[in-house]
Figure 1 (cartoon, one colour):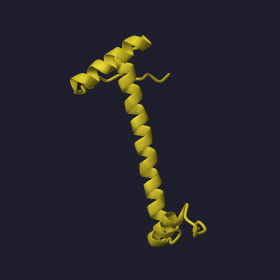
Figure 2 (cartoon, one colour; figure 1 turned 30 degrees about the horizontal axis):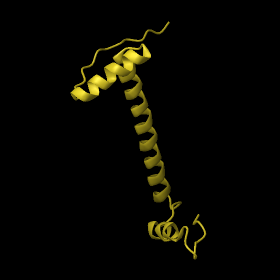
Figure 3 (spheres, one colour; figure 1 turned 180 degrees about the horizontal axis):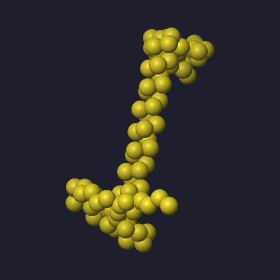
Length: 89
């Protein structure tokens, strides 16, 4: 059986943020720790997704599988104009 250790951590929040967090916790009948844990977990997931996406894009460019930035910008700038270009691939 696996146990999960809850290790305390200290976070300094601006007073207005702390008050809003406390009010939200009270309204939801949850602890402030619950919301902080959820927020940090979501942030970590998002950052991990972004970092992995950037690494993948860099590898694709290194492997020659990317689209030249100037070509991509030319296409982007043409969107919603009378001379809209076909999306590069």
